[in-house]
Image 1 (cartoon, rainbow, N blue to C red):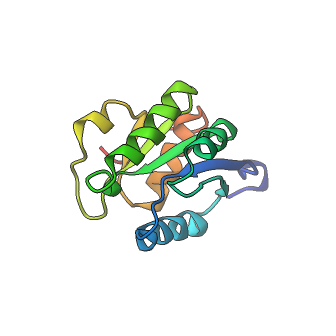
Image 2: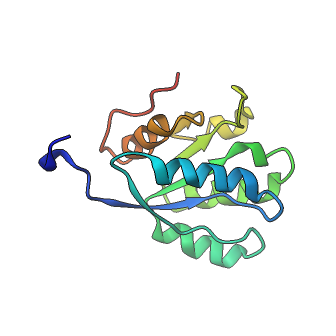
Amino acid sequence: MFEEEMDNRIYKLFISQFKGEEEENILFKNRLDNASDFQWENYSVPQDAPPEIKNKINEVDVVVVLSGLYSHYPDYIELVVNTAREQNKPLVIIRPYGVENIPLELEKKAQEVVGWNAPCIVDAIKGVLGGGEGSCDI
């Protein structure tokens, strides 16, 4: 990639997370860390801090929801999704690892829905901000 084509932006992301579910979150963050031409900052906070969640989402560019958490923690995921919508933040939903379907109520609220492929995730994040072509997942 040519130097002038490099994306030097640092994307501010809020990524859903839940205590006791760190393995999925760590795997996801590692994919972002290893993605080429993508720098990001993590604005996530523990699920038990609703006022802080709202404040952090206010500071970010994109809200990313790991939808695999929805079946066990619907109230938390709905808080994150609804806060993103209230604050007009783009919402990218990540399908559960190895699964194609996500709850319809989440899909309807998202600007993008993608799987765990790092280039697709990066494309989706950049795409919802108008800086890319959107996701590569169908």
